[in-house]
Amino acid sequence: MTDAAELRTRTREFLAAHPPASTGRDDFLRARFDAGLAWVHYPEGLGGLGAPRSLQAVVDAELEAAGAPDNDPRRIGIGLGMAAPTVLGFGTEEQKRRFLRPLWTGEEVWCQLFSEPGAGSDLAALGTRAVRDEASGDWIVNGQKVWTSSAHTARWAILIARTDPEQPKHRGITYFVCDMTDPGVEVRPLRQITGEAEFNEVFLTDVRIPDAHRLGAVGEGWKVAQTTLMNERVSIGGMRIPREGGMIGPVAKAWRERPELRTHDLHQRLMKLWVDAEVARLTGERLRQQLVAGQPGPEGSGMKLGFARLNQEISGLEVELLGEEGLLYDDWTMRRPEIVDFTGRDAGYRYLRSKGNSIEGGTSEVLLNIVAERVLGLPSEPRTDKDVAWKDLAR
Image (cartoon, rainbow, N blue to C red):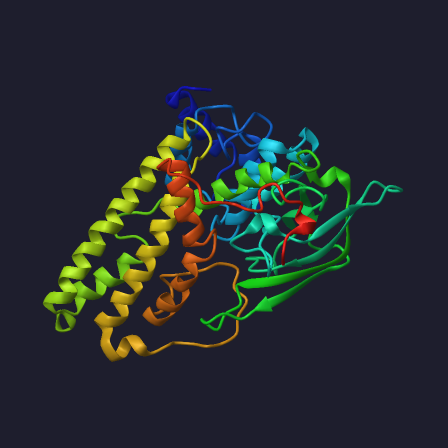
């Protein structure tokens, strides 16, 4: 399936057999997956047709024109952007068939159990332990994870844990799929500066994970995690948005509609940020086109780095533009939202929430190192812990 015209015809035939107006949402999404129109570049039987990734736009355009429901990608972004490509790349055939369909339809939400209180920026130093029960073959997991988006709504989690403390920190890690409904999994809200608790901390106490839910080989979890992390940064920094989409939109709208707020200095700053936002948008489009040819690379780290800086600068300008009104805050009610809505709240919310952009998905400091070493080819920083067993590291 490599021809756009043939794929367009196939999509129209699918719509004729499953009219969006008379087909239930879940039934429509399941049928779309089974027809190979979910991810056209995925293999047949796994939501795709083995077609070029660029042809997904052909399918999406036909479905959108017909008023077809989508799978609410903002709600299931971790599953779509991080778990799915990792399962596809390292999962067994049984794992792919079990997890990918309900993940894509949104029937099962995913979260990411990576960061820990003592291993955030230095993720490879993680201390959550997974010990093999020789009698059953299961893994017994104990530890704590933090900053876990969607943990309060998730059914499954992608989890990395240390299985061999005798190895250096980047080795001896194994990658698992954890059932968030299992005994021993406790999710607690983390209330943020915005008043909401979209993040969580997760405590794992004697949680049993069957070996059938391991992704990749024992001790090679860091290799598997790199696929997750690269896709995470692309999904955060390379989102498709229209011109004046995202954070720059509300500022540009306020500038046009409220001339009494304008000053020469604010105009100069707005124009610079508007251009930066447009450059970032077009660079994101270019990055997505590069993905058609293969797996994401370190360029996604650069995009995510720019995304964080832009959001923080734009939201700061918006608060200044609005003056005293910008200091107001609409609602401090404690919520545990399913999605982050930057444009659906006021300027104060955007200003506070954007502070987390330089932490989540990899801190800006870590991403600067990645860009320096893997994109620009600069010498890496000295590392004294490279060949030291994890158990011997100072903590």
